[in-house]
Image (cartoon, rainbow, N blue to C red):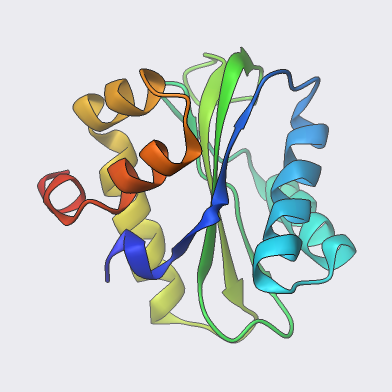
Length: 154
């Protein structure tokens, strides 16, 4: 599985100012709704429910919120780069500025886990994160994320 199969170019955004984790989850849900035809409320509620189980801030300024959604027929991603990091209750207590949200079908099993592993591997790579932080054009960010050389090396 490659990131290119999970992430549409229009699902990559740069956000100038984000006020809270709750607002960030809303932005992820709204973006997923616009790009993949999901119900915004269902996407936001699913993200908030999953976050209630435990924070998805994995450290190093990265968060990987994910949720299962009724009515979705494939795993889909949304990437947000925040110009100003926010508190996300990450495991290392550092603010988050790179957020890759994943949405999977409600009954998806292995595909959801494979997608999460691919995203996690890429987002753990310090060189990939540095390149993402150094760019503020959504198309460039999409190209960086979906470059098979980068994601396979990560």
